[in-house]
Length: 230
Ligand SMILES: [Zn+2]
Image 1 (cartoon, rainbow, N blue to C red):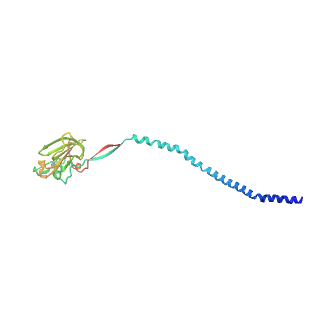
Image 2: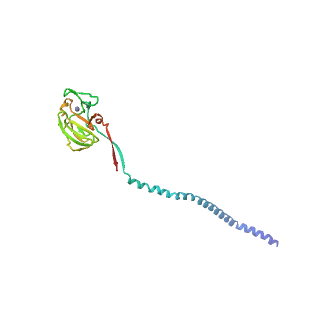
């Protein structure tokens, strides 16, 4: 019996010793499982956050659908300042504009007299191109002792310009002209002013009243025009 009692703990101890490797293996498996579970649970927590942005996608659709409707429907109009261009490439001013309330007179050497000069004389080389200062319609062409060959253009909004002392007039009555279009050439055909040499005699009236052509010749007069951009 003693042998049995001493043998039994020996058998149990031997059992533990024989299976300790198995027990360690089971412990390891449990430990690994625990780690895997812990990692898996942690990962499950994070996907909850990306789910919210996915729910926000409907908001992205709303702004995406509105802009295409606006683009084709709106025509754009721009306001542009269009300037009167100097009618000739002049070297200097001849007779200045002296008509007006001050009632000043200008000495005209050709006529040997003092009188009003209701125009501006722009000295240039003989044959220099004379161009329309702005779009308009030719309302008169002709020849006179005072003005030589001349062209009268209605530039709209009450502005009428007379381009005088020309050679070879290039336009006819009733013709539409555009800004910078050649209408004739500088000469000395204005016999009343031939001593001044070749020049353009430029007159401007606004609503029938003579006005100083200087700001027109200097390109300081402009109109604001609405232009439709496509
Ligand atoms: Zn003149």
